[in-house]
Length: 354
Ligand code: YSA
Image (tube, rainbow, N blue to C red; front, top):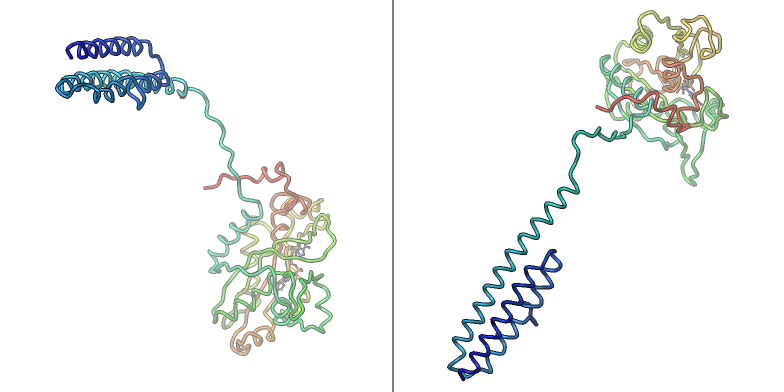
């Protein structure tokens, strides 16, 4: 009996000495894990010793059990110390490797900028807000009813042809890409009662040959004001103020008779060229004037069509080309550049986004 206990004591001492020597040699977290497996793991030496206790005579088991458990506790504690030391060292090393040199110059952050057309729309919304107009937006795919009929252009009217309409296939109803922002006049009046003061920025589409001043897709700004006693003087005053805000106080504004089925009377609206001060240049095609759009007093038929009483209410409306305004302000001479997606062109207009 005493012989067996002595043998176990010797074995415990041998395992202890070997385990501590090997733990001293451990230099990495992986090696520490291997050590733990060899001594404390399920098939480790100490675990085997604990399992073997059952084969000892019953009276020896308590003392042998305490001695083996004591060895296990000692090795576990040493292993925890070494493990903690190695993990701290590994963390220090990772920190040292990832260290940031705060004296290095920062990397430039590339952020986008609003497109020049979006910038101009924002500017126009601000200008018109000061004049009491609210901005509304409408569908780009439109019915013939709003794009034409309610604008006093019935389906058999020859004026329907001049809009170079892109038709979207539809068996039951005439569906088009809106040829102008004017359909929003009727949509707005159907929803609101006078006084009405709205602007409508948005894309318009026409089946048109492209050149330096025409695109098949372009952007318009519609304006509409309806109330009692609105006159042509209000229209002229509003567009004059717009020109003043956009191009400065010295610009001259020109109104000439024009025809649009949805206004009576109708005018076209031009500003003397800000690039050459009205002297004539490439941008104004040497006329000294830049056409901005059409305008006029809302036709009584349009008011009637949306249920307004034309005896009580009058209104003015206008439609301007937004790309043309930017061209006038900046001297860009080819309207196709706006949809050309050339980043070098667009960068010239980049303003920080705030
Ligand atoms: C007229 C009277 C009103 O009471 C209300 C609105 C209008 C304007 C009308 N709806 C209209 O579209 N007239 S327009 O055909 O002369 O276009 C107005 C402006 O849009 C033009 O002066 C031009 O600046 C721009 N535009 C028209 N077609 C364009 C274009 N811009 C670029 N490419 C095109 N293809």
